[in-house]
Length: 185
Image 1 (tube, helix red, strand yellow):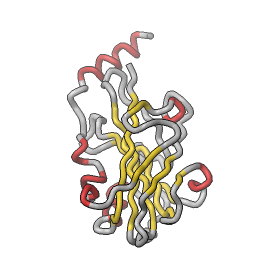
Image 2: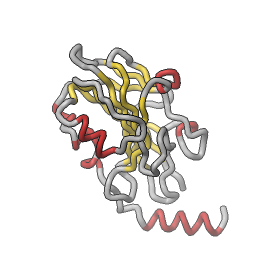
Image 3: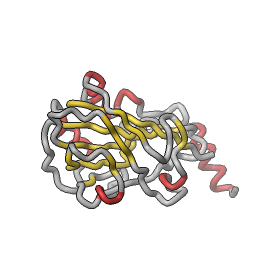
Image 4: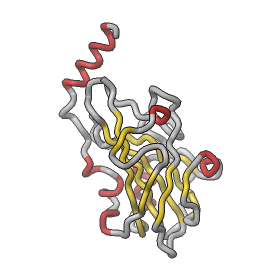
């Protein structure tokens, strides 16, 4: 590794205590801990385990396929939001926002992305931004949160986190969370 990498790694190590915090995740902000639980899984990783390299900025930068079960019969749509509460920022780093998914769908893969809307990440890009914690900052937890709503959202592409959470407020009828981890040293 070069000198530049070593400097970045040391800065990351120094910033280790700085984290936005799990209390700022969308599931907490929306009170989704008080609704029925969706069982969220992925064939690419297990809950609490490392993300596949393909889902990181060091790999192909491709989102993992997600599956969920337990959507209530009254649900009208699904929202998927991936956030990193370990980022050294005031709010969790948004890696992915997908909305406009029909409630009958239980798997988010490349084919379903073709009909869904995607919002802006913290970097301002529309679509998925792979895991890329600062080198030396330690293990980051990537929360793939799935929400069942009692409404169909009519937001256009490129919506930001604040507008999405505002539109979802008081409409979450079930929610689940799958956590993948990643670190760079």
